[in-house]
Image 1 (cartoon, helix red, strand yellow):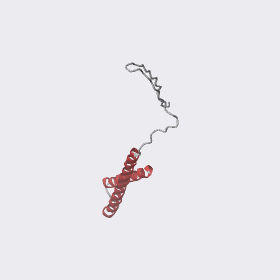
Image 2 (image 1 turned 45 degrees about the vertical axis):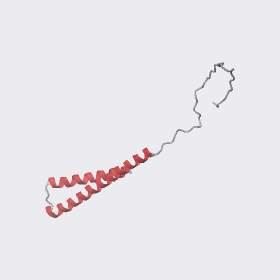
Image 3 (image 1 turned 120 degrees about the vertical axis):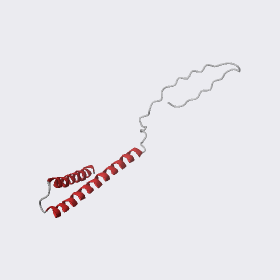
Image 4 (image 1 turned 90 degrees about the horizontal axis):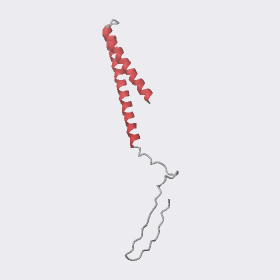
Length: 107
């Protein structure tokens, strides 16, 4: 709706009733919705980067710890280790592999 103007003349001391009919403003189809600032996307991106770094660091730690424990067991057990020692080393290895696999899947 285009703005319009009208001139109303009244006698001095007189009154004039003016009635304005206003139509609701309709959205024009060529108006694009406001674009997001990107701060939410940036925040989500950094959260995923941090999560990926945590997965990578955790996986690397547990994989290195499992390798170190395996070397220690090989040197001290002479092929006869207790099941508790072996299970602990295997658990660390599984945790490391799962975390590194999750890192790979997330990327």
